[in-house]
Amino acid sequence: MQFLFRYANPAMFMRLSGAVLPYVAAAAVLTLAAGLYMGFNVPPDYQQGMTVLIMFIHVPAASVAMSAYGAIAVCSFLSLVWRHPLSDTAARAAAPLGAMFTALGLITGALWGKPMWGTYWVWDARLTSFLLLLFLYLGYMALWNAIEDETRAARATAVLALVGAVNIPIIKFSVDWWNTLHQGESIMTGDLAPVFLWPLLTMMAGYMLLFITLWLIRIRTAIVERRARNLMQRA
Amino acid sequence: MSAFSALLVRDLKLATRGGGGAALALGFFALVATLVPLGIGADLALLAKVAGGVLWVGAVLAALLSLDGLFQGDYDDGSLELIALAPLSLELASLAKIAAHWLSTGLPLTLLSPLLALLFNLSPGATAVLFVSLLLGTPAVSAIGAIGASLTLSLRRGGLILPLIILPLLSPAVIFGAGAVAAKLDGFAPSGALGLLGAFSLAAVLLSPFAAAASVRLNLSG
Image 1 (cartoon, helix red, strand yellow):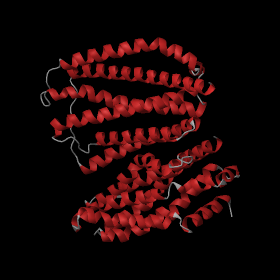
Image 2 (cartoon, rainbow over the protein chains, first blue to last red):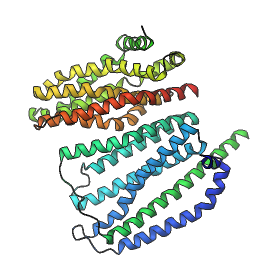
Image 3 (cartoon, rainbow over the protein chains, first blue to last red):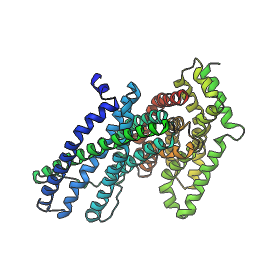
């Protein structure tokens, strides 16, 4: 626990994150470039043709979207239990990013669905649970914006994030159950060939690094913003 | 009379007397059930097919109507502070409020549902399943709704943001509730869906008072 609190001091966090940020950003750019290069050089899939390339931007977006909610839940837990002051800011900063990656996953999924399934939207279990995840993000962000008092907003959204974290597996299960009841078709079958796996893993790492970069920038911006507001009030 | 039942009886009286939300929710539910055939046509076979889903969604929306007042009135006039100070723990007080909300909203909606199912040409067997599913599932709506109501407590327009927070969390109840009716219509046993719905509902009723009490506390302390 001790080391977590050493970086709870905003000045300390600013110094450390400022030093780390350029490297993380550079790693994100390089990994994404490598992943895209590898992705564009895969042979066309025997069933899906070149549309399989959409997988390289779709699957990583979906996995980051889930991880971002996990990050929010962990930050909320830290903030509720130990009143860790920076984790409120971190949780708030992660939410729009998570919502963006969820939306990206939905949009690329719809674009992939058009050539594959012949329609932009099917009530597939994964698409449906991601749509619900997007609404969870939007509700979380709306609650942050609606409560004026910042400490109160932080604690209320932390409770909501934890309730959501408990509920997400149940929602996922119920949507899967609902899907098998209504339609028994399964599209994603067969294992992924290594030739597709490596570009995919590289892209996943790239997306994750991109998320961390943007997250750090957003936390730093929020801290600077708060400092500026305090200075304005004092002046 | 124990503090728990005193609070329960008080909230029930407030809900049922003098413009409480209970009767309004029933009217809303009946109106939704009337508007749907006007929208999708009077084909009785189609109506029977969609009845489970429509009535479940209608019941959840109707229960939402009175949710924003669950803690709001007591918060505005200060009695919530007294309830928080009382020897009864805030978790149990939240449970009493959830129970009062269910008795004044969820239960009447459930009792009304067979009549509306009749209008939707639902078979007697499927109507029984719908009734049981609402009986099992509406406590979850009140319980999870209480979390939303306590989170939006200090907001002037909390009623607007409440559905956005609550409805995604309630999707399992709608899925299992309407799924049980669909299973019955398709000739399968509805017991699996009803069992899952009951489990979801029990977990919600058990865990929600803790989340609701925590967020009431943070709203009182700030």
